[in-house]
Length: 326
Image 1 (cartoon, helix red, strand yellow):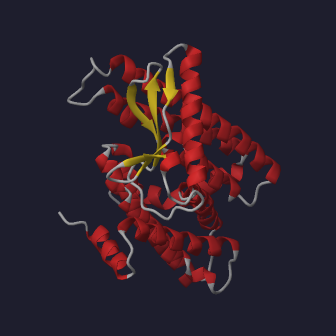
Image 2 (tube, one colour; image 1 turned 60 degrees about the vertical axis):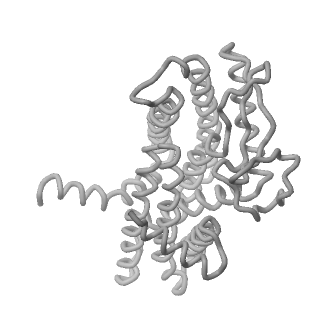
Image 3 (cartoon, helix red, strand yellow; image 1 turned 180 degrees about the vertical axis):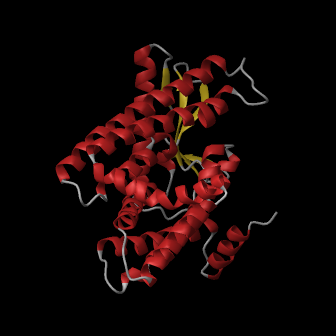
């Protein structure tokens, strides 16, 4: 079945000589500029930008679902596809507020939270030095943890660059180190893990293994809470970011250990231990940990809690009416 959204975006990009990846990057950049200007420079001109911004952001995340289909990650498939109707709904809410000439503090916060979540992540993703540095640091920490605990003498291979059809080592790659000008393969910059004897573990670290997405979501949500003292927000960041990194290292080490110890003997309906651990067990535990951290932050930043409840209120109302039949 043809994907109308992907086909439309591909056709639009072809007009300007862009491939799908480049067009999608342009779309998310436009979307973030729209909501970023509305958050930081609210005036009679920028107030019309958020509806456009929300639709662009929804399209960007929707198109990302293709990658998660390829790696069979049901949680991220659902979240990516659901992002489009949710963002369109928030764009409609913004349009209603504009028409009624009023504002909602929680909606203003949501603009800032999304802007300060997505913009730094995209910057890191498209600056090869930062991207590769974070990938290497995450893999190195995981290797150290495995060796320290005695779970395995797992070491780092050379930093690699996925060019789509082939891969090159970081040192031999001729691309720009400070600005991504090439369209890379799905792996992007990655570090393969190896045993002490040099044999491959068949697991590689990419940017998605760094938990940067989780960190940056909390960063955006905290930074955008303008009604809270900066000291409290700084404290919240110092609690959240190191804790997420530590939990992520533990998660990565656990997945590698399970893969090394049980991959040859474990099978569940054709699913090996790595796929089960990575796509299901680790995701469940990660979402649970994020929920618990959110509860701590709500106690530290009550304004954050009220904003989250306010932006989720329309969704609660819709499901509430469907459940009660009203």
